[in-house]
Image 1: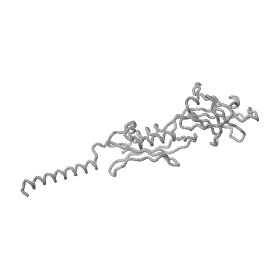
Image 2 (image 1 turned 180 degrees about the vertical axis):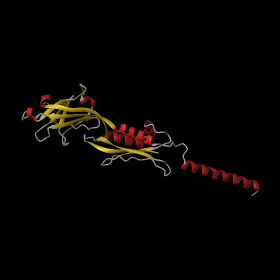
Image 3 (image 1 turned 135 degrees about the vertical axis):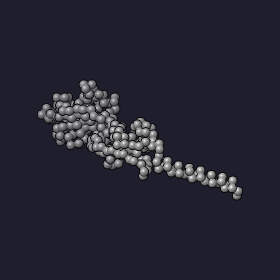
Image 4 (image 1 turned 90 degrees about the vertical axis):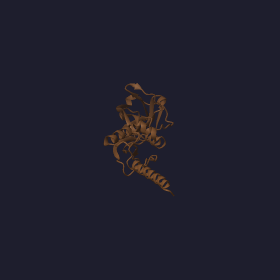
Length: 243
């Protein structure tokens, strides 16, 4: 091989070596990745929690047993918000009716009237929740029953609470449409993220993106109220990571 050929081979090897070095540098020190900060993790966690929330209408009723006819086993409430009636049937809100110990009570919905079972075995406080996060449970409870003079509304409120239905939807979007979700959450193109919802039993498996050893990871966690499809509310931990 003459010297010109040797020089040509040397140039090719040098170029290949240069490309390999550049590839290693990009792998180790990705120049397009934006350095994260603790405030980014706070922002991400707040957005994740907001994405998990469902509206929950909550009523606490105090039964007045002294006014209750002995033969009567059901009562009714006309659900309202700020004096504006909510038609439960038209809005598709699911309903949960429980006693003060969290035991489910049978109910029936007719328009915006909610009829529910009552007998002396239950506590004198009944909690009613209405939300899209709750699965409607139909039954054959007969309509009718006494009106408001047999109970008083102790409290009612409209809360935003993390829900199982929203959690399953968010996990599904992370697994199936990650880039779009990342954009909607305001995460820079060069960064990645994941989140976790501590629930027993576990929810859908989140297929988290890989975190390379050399990357800085910022994380945050928070206890939030969580409502399941039966209307049970408890506290769970939600965490988020960005890198």
